Length: 214
Image (cartoon, rainbow, N blue to C red; front, side, top):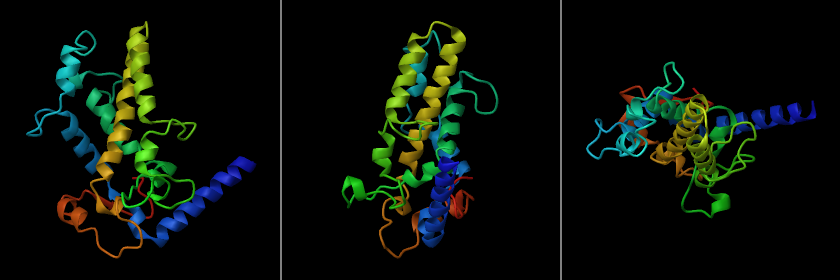
């Protein structure tokens, strides 16, 4: 009960602080993250194509003859691309959103959102001690990948590959957020995030609320 009370207090404090500063509650919505993730991995959608599809087909062709279209877990987000897209949306879930800010003008321990128990998105991405129930750091992605390569059963390899690409999606989300000035200049500055308005408002890809999880 004590831990539950502490968690509720933390959630309440975070929500209150985000309501006080709407810039902390401004972010790309799920559709935006899904589209940007697709462009990041699909070689047909950009003039500077990702090498992931070719890497999977050549280096790991025995596992991924279909490259990024390889189905790992089934369902809407079951392919390699789908797992990355899924991770890129789940990174906004719950308390994770507190750690999606980095102001390069400040020191590492002050560059984040300023919310309780939060840290810079760059530090968060490399922190192996993220939330105990859902760790998605760069180290976790590497660990899942190694485990997938060394697992002995097909089903276990597919599960671990799915976790690998989902975790990459979580990390891609942090890079995507860094494209938004609202995530890199949040220290007592009065401005409207014209970049997000101009680039995404007409496409209905901006989500503004008291929480970035949508």
